[in-house]
Image 1 (cartoon, one colour):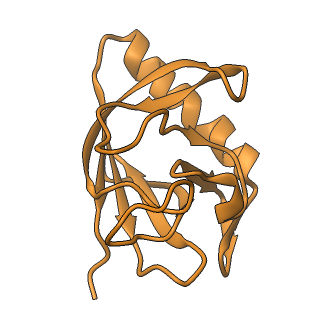
Image 2 (tube, rainbow, N blue to C red):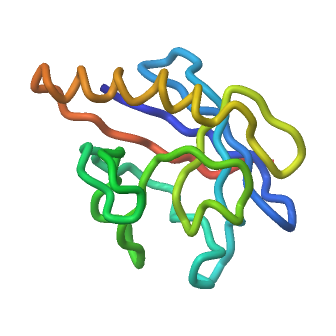
Image 3 (tube, rainbow, N blue to C red):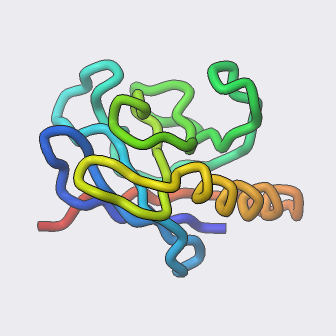
Length: 135
């Protein structure tokens, strides 16, 4: 399974994006600001391709998708949340969006996670390709 996150240009507060699964629209995303240098808890991860598994999150105390081998970051997950305050480098998902936030985040996560879990249970590898914004 291949996820593709197409980032849009960052505002001063957050980075919006659109997530696709195997070429089909899934939901909106929100991340921290894309920066040339990392500021802990305030910077989006580097564009690239990362493998995803679902593991128990110590912070959220439940299974959530985890991105592996993200340069300069640890514990990057896909999870519900609404604004960049909730990200700390992670990817937030939402069914709607307004400036600097996603909405209906829990609903988006409830739709996304079972798809990832099924692919993993079926023995598929799950990957996400994060693409830099094009101007």
